[in-house]
Length: 133
Image (tube, rainbow, N blue to C red):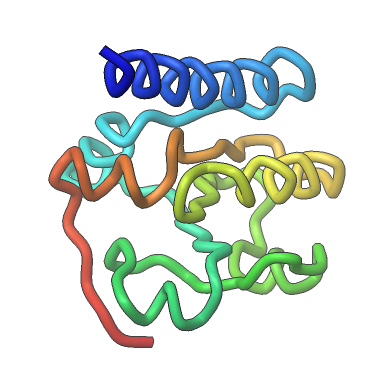
């Protein structure tokens, strides 16, 4: 029973984290399912992975660009120069990426979102990954 309650509390915290960023700061979430569909249908957004270079090299979404957190707006703009193009920011669990989404929004990006629960959810949902730099 203790394990069940722990799991419920962890899941609630994850949901509240995303909801808080969405309603409190306008950081739109993108579900792993929605990103997986976009990638599979050849309409993938620019994917900016803000994990460390080591995390990125271990596994990442094919085509993702690694811009380690914290990043400057200039570094993010180098990965996605068009501020109107759809961008999804990814980290390991969805905790480093929301501030980056907010930073990009404040820098003039109009179509940027956070991958809900990050690479953990991507892997659980069977999303394709590759390794290397």
